[in-house]
Amino acid sequence: MKIGFLIIASEVLDGKITDLNTSIFASFLRSHHLEINKAITVRDRAEDILQGLATLFEDSDVIVTSGGLGPTRDDITKETLGNFMGRKLEFSPAAVEVAEENYQRFSRTFPGREHGYAYLPEGFTPLSNSTGFAPGLTTSHRDRTFLSGPGVPREFRSMLEDHLVPILKRLRRSDEVLGHFIVRTKNVPEEKIFSEVDPKLWDQLEAFGEVSSLPILMGVDIGVKLTAPTAAEFEEKSTALRSLFEASPLKPHIWGFGRESLEEKIVRRATEQGLRFGFAESASGGLCSHRITTVPGSSRCFQGSVVCYDESVKQSLLGVSEETLKTYTPVSAEASREMAAGLARLLKLDVAISVTGYAGPTGGDDGTSVGTVYVGRAVRGELSAHVYHLKGDREVLKQRFSQAALYALLEEVEKIAEG
Image (cartoon, rainbow, N blue to C red; front, side):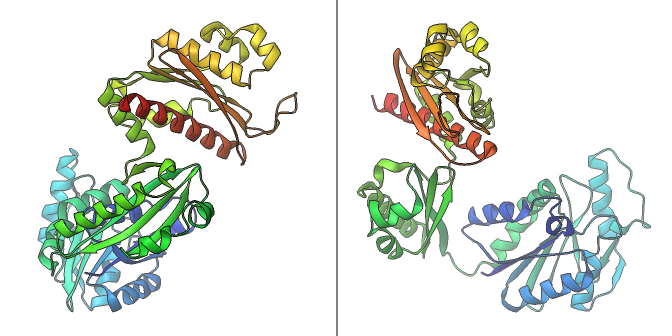
């Protein structure tokens, strides 16, 4: 089944907002073993929308659009879809009923038939909107199925979940399973993976399906697109792929399989082991804590953090000695170990991670360069520290500092889990 996606949003092309709906739609389809065949972004202009529809119509079984269903003058999706199919816009009692239900859900009164929501092109069916006011719509035209949803991401997501699933089930022609096998690696550049670490890997993976390599923050996600006639055969291929990676020289750099994020894996594994952890953050400014607390359920394992940006905070709250700060400087292995040890005592942690470094624009008075960061670890009384020399501007370096800290945390959590 080929699925086309038309994003109608001048704001995206003007850089005023970021397109989230493509990611939402791709994730939704992936969960149903499908994928977007082609996506086009156009402005809220009739000629651009018509051109996009014509392009997608050529080779799509299903065409989904997002945007342009609101009540303002630039919301012309319905009218343009009607023109594309040669259908006139007309008053729709069914659309009024759906719009009234949408408004009642938010304790609002629908204005009535003079409102634009009351009109649909001939032969279109209105769709309820469980998170907003604008009805969606669907129809068929010359063996193509159309579904239009609002541009607001949360409304677009609910439109897919509420209405697209039964459409896909009705149209699906086979039981073929499509999915992506994802391997997540750390601390090795993309070019070294396939040229130095495991030169045979790419060819081995291509025997299973289309291979992709996506550099991410201090790591690379390697993906293989798998197809199989049945779910059982899909699992067999996935198992064989995992065995291939487990036997690869790349294995020491693999931190995860699948789409689970680094933060999600840390929270899951720490919770499974009943561990308590936290951060002493200087150079990362609280970013580690922010990333962990975006995960639901993180309160079961994350106890808290100290953002110890100033030396006085390192001393007063974490017990870093004045002698250490003067002799070795605040950006040192010695300071990072004392920061981690102090946090572990303060919050009674199993694992404490500290971050101290230079994010720029200047480095240390002792000549330490921008991008230098020490990640300290205190794990049930055992102290250690590692230094990293990273590249980037201030914002990028803060992200990389936090990534190094989270990698360190996951390593310690996994060591405890393995006994």
